[in-house]
Length: 224
Image 1 (cartoon, one colour):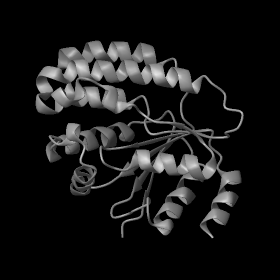
Image 2 (cartoon, one colour):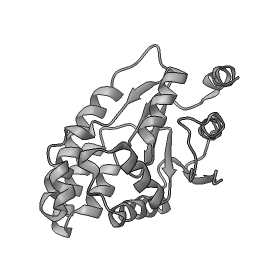
Image 3 (cartoon, rainbow, N blue to C red):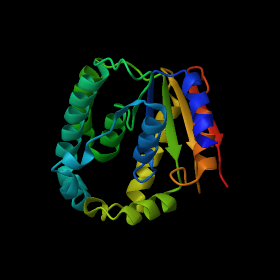
């Protein structure tokens, strides 16, 4: 039944480029991989483990914030510039597990004022080279659920992530969405959902992202 339903939706998804965002531990990469497998979408995954400053940053954020954010920005730009410029004749949709603007949101949260002003100037130059996604989806979970997910995947570089840090990142996203007027944003409250193993949960999200939304911020909640 699921396969038949997905086959129908595959013809109806109206978006050529979807960016999936969310806090650390939300499950955005898992979701993007499922979409790619089920719909034949081109997949862009952030290569976060390649950042040599990330483990040091989680241990000493003030000292390593600028190099970690600068590395992320240049690597994301290089990846998106290559992937989004290549036409995939066999895929009608491209799905990415990040949106380039997350670079600025994380930097604003992590950098000192003078560092952020410099960083923002560099970001604005690079950001002008990208097309906007047709839909930006933000997967929202409460912080305690994020911590549980982070602990369950047991990545060494994430062992020092705190609830306070996750709360700051979450607030940065939500504040950005308040003033966002460039593209459609869909905030999905997926608290308690297990779209990796639960067919019903997965289908609810598929149905939500298969709709067309006007520019602005839209919200749907699937809280159990």
